[in-house]
Image (tube, rainbow over all chains, first blue to last red):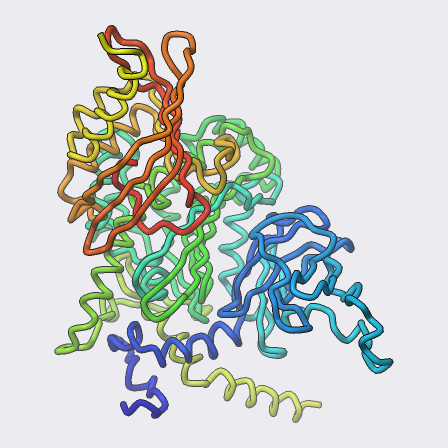
Length: 435
Length: 156
């Protein structure tokens, strides 16, 4: 590939393998920013992080700094963190509450719904300057599913509902672990970074083949304490499965392993919790929710949901990534149960946890290995011969199979090659014909 | 005869040396059975009842942390971190059965050709144990507890 040539994504991604440059090439990263993060739906935050009018949190959509804020009107908004005058960020602090955002450079003042409230010394502008034309620009599209706030920089495209598809049912299972059907995402934030490509984190989050190797010390400790040990769930004879719902939304599904002894059955106050769940959802649905254990899902490209946590992946460059973990609290449960969730989360996750740092070590080793391109391919063929389709189109395989990685790259390639737009144009033509 | 200040400082320096020289069993033996090794996350006063911490180890979990450090398959410590730390600004006051001690620290950590610098304030609760002390609480207020950290699997 010459420096100015467009990257040939059909050549870099095949059904059963991907090329090293997918993870290392700065031009690929630029294309990812433009085509994935500055066009499609990107997860921004959970509405429970900003419960009261004026509550805000800074966020990123690709490279765009934005503010997720609940305006005085009670609505969550995604506003550009950029003064309309000369581009300074108008909010500097990650989380807080504000009625106004003021640009400290020349004093322009915005209401927390984004409207420009005042400019300094307004007689310097003539009658053609209208304040209503200079509010903080909202993200062109925003949508909220059960408090999960997504934004898109593209003014048009498929709806969030259509984009999520069957992944929405997994979001339901995560949220419905609360007997009130609501979570609170203000359980602290674990923040970490690593010297590796962002896709390593999302692939690893959905990788049922690695845990018995990368996390053997953690599983060994569970065994030592006589606790439920997930080694068998990730072994060759596991009854857990991988699922690919399309659009890059993939999951590890352990429900079949958990039905007999779901993890929540050993939580403090488990009998009362179960009772409250049955009262709210009925016995059958409650059992389904509890055995899902809070799902294990990737919402492509940047949101992972595992058990207790939301995991948000932020690409910085081809070989640098930041990850924020938001352990969530369940509304309507005993405080002891939420504390048990928090302590359980800490034991594995975060920069000093007993599990996640070992994954980061793998990413950095992998990023180093990628530099050797004598055989530039990474093999994603595991279980391709035994992958099956369900009637609704979901692809299913063994938990150790790379159904999930193939699902991620199928979507990645579709978006990177621009076939999404072709499909939309075709759809537009079809709809026009119907009209 | 050592002064009280000398006894407390010597103990803190001894603890620091055990960590920096990877003498994990000896370090673990300094702790009480009701130990709490605590590194708050996001802010120094984060509430463990409602928020996750970077570390919130009771005695059991502390022992597991040491097991991991001794293991050869805790990959985030293969190769292991080399550390050296300085303690200063030591202040203390008597409490029932011991002393509440605060100090500042700077810690250099070297691993995989990358050196990271950590700094902060440590709050020790020391219990009298004859001529020496046991650690009941070690709470570390990291300056960067609200910023991304790639690896904090060594002892702080």
